[in-house]
Picture 1 (cartoon, rainbow, N blue to C red):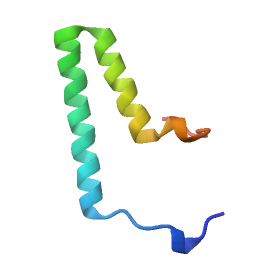
Picture 2 (cartoon, rainbow, N blue to C red):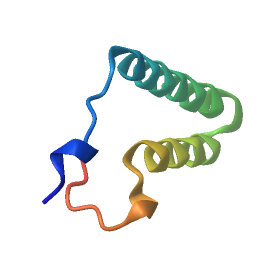
Picture 3 (tube, rainbow, N blue to C red):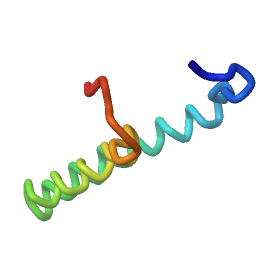
Picture 4 (cartoon, helix red, strand yellow):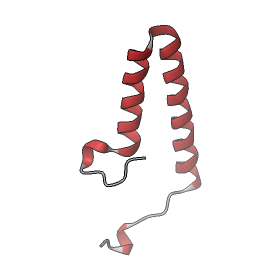
Length: 64
């Protein structure tokens, strides 16, 4: 389990920043696909997913 004191709520500012970052990544993927092709778009998409879901941190039990 976790210690309740060690968990903080996500703020509205953090949520807005995450949404903006996610949207910017989607735009970057689209631009890369249009200008450089599927390989470049896939590379950007993989980096974005790794950053958001932190797959390198440890085992992931749920993968959307």
